[in-house]
Image (cartoon, rainbow, N blue to C red):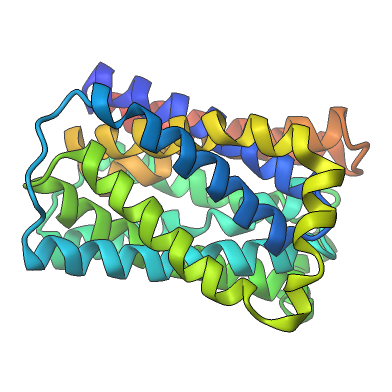
Length: 290
């Protein structure tokens, strides 16, 4: 994995953790995520005249990958918001990132990618960290806690989000292979915004749109550049590295999310969650070396 690709994905990871913190602090999660896309898409549109790549219309296959990615990521965001309604940031956020379990499988079987022995060790370290982060202590009873938690609605939503995200990541990898990552990301955000807008036409959400803006307009403004940076740096990094490595390395964001949850949101079990986050970080470093 090249140093530039690694750097881009690490920056994306930091931004990804930050916008998840913004979602956690909002009141109406689904509506707030829609407002985040309003801010991000508006900022994105203003930067189009300064785009680093020349524009060309996407081919039908590229549009198919954009559509598939948009559907997967909209479902990811909806499940993500549902999980945060009843779960801690330092637990739900890592579980939403369990795409790292599936992406190497898709990358090897569908894209023909090859993983080194060191890279595989790093991936397993990341998976072990994501598993142990759900435990409250290092004990025999707690080893099976993640399986017992499968009955929890927030945990179920978070795990479903991770699986859906893995499918979207493969669509992205295929889509940016022969098309500008900048314009691919723009179309992706645009398609996601349209799908989310359709969802917000439902009566249960319409009455929440303006109150959410009035209450959290500051967070919404911040979310625009944060989300845009997260999107762009990841897609450019994805274009420079195998998806089997890119997605696990992005899990550095888990460590950031855990630290935020412990230090700023006062969430419990800080010691074991921090250890698990460090294990994830170490796994990402091993992947970089591989």
